[in-house]
Length: 376
Image 1 (cartoon, rainbow, N blue to C red):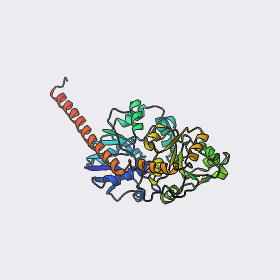
Image 2: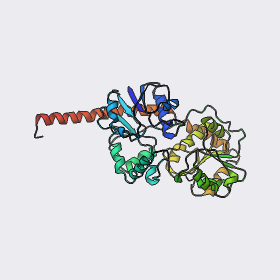
Image 3: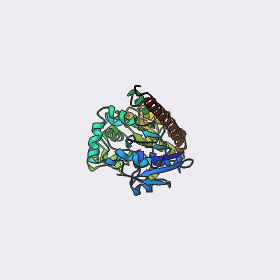
């Protein structure tokens, strides 16, 4: 099967969630299938596997409306996009589009890296569900990364197309913790600082945990840092890393007491499963997607109660609790692999080919009847 994978959402400096999702699926698919990548910037290749590629226009370009004309000439068996915004006007190929989550309907602040005109369109787009329906119904199959999001797609009737799961997964852990080894009193947070991420409650919780330090690992704007630093105990108990490498992230995970996240909404929660893969326990907000990803291995708390967060962290100091949470996390993380996700995507591609062929047959049959009987 010749799969054309849209890798134009790959970052050029470091992976974000969608960038890593696409690159990991490409690597896993390419072991068994004929995969060709679409890129828009040669710098993206540094973060992509060694797979054949074709360079075309940016997905943020006005030319995206007509990108199918270029793709038609490549004659793919199926095209996969890890987003739902790929242009498809005039396409002559099966298409799988991906919807990761519906976070921005409740939290409409767009990602800051997008150009200003795109951010304005982003806000308008998320004022109603009908634009999403228009995008998703252009596909033959809609992929999503979690059963939680699949349920929301059904609840809001976002598409008439089949919705199939193509899950996320952690990178294979090169090192794993000894559950009985010493650990530091560090708490880690990996994620953005948008309001729905609820980082303020994390800072308030660490103020209730003498001797602990909260490490905020992601890049942060000066204005947002000032807001968090102004909270009680932040200057003494919070360390801002403003970005870490993959190696630094792994080193911190292998030393910390727990990874903590109190997000009120999430598409998946990859840091949860990344931490569990190394054997680091997780304290997470009690929301459906985290229950799905973390299973029974995480410690769930009310995201608005810093005292509950502090109590969950202290519970890990009880005899045997930390080691038990560590082992449970490793077992839970093992249920997610890129090999399994690639097989899910392979099934989605086959379904898209079938759906495209069926609709094409119906359309051609209707056209044939119309030619034979102009009154039909």
